[in-house]
Length: 117
Length: 113
Image (cartoon, rainbow over all chains, first blue to last red; front, side):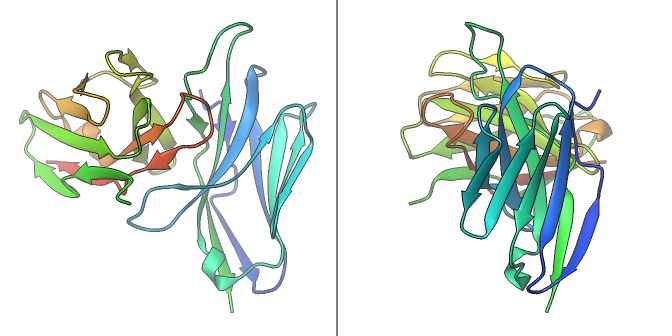
């Protein structure tokens, strides 16, 4: 049972345009969400995160939006650059009240972003 | 500034062979993790160690064992490799066991034939 889903395996955009990557989750206990970027033959690197108490977090060209009622989050990259071409993973963590997640993350399947010059 | 170092980077095993994947971090992080990445599945947690001296199962622990040798090192052992364990394995660490602050290694690509 995939608790975090990225339904688009790939996305292709033109340089300078907006890239929108989507992620859905089913577990209502998730309270922290992250996006990771991964280049071939490298490990994932942290990009941006958002807590469930917020609905938006911005860092330079990257903005993450969270819609808790729809259990949906999205990553916006504006403007997109060829160097943004990579696999993007959505991840989530959460814990029962009074407990801890120990930092365990549940990942989506990933979306391959290609930005064309 | 090595971060998280994984060895080996590539390995081919025959079914039934055993091997240990090594992971070491030099950031004095408390928590360490092993994930596997498979096409269409994302990364899935195999085992984790919240702090030195503790280990616990993740989502897909069957067929694996781990050892938190000391604060720096967290190894993953396959006792009897199976083709279903063909995957890319990532070790990660974070300072406090929170959900943020992860550093991943560059991965070990394992093929079991």
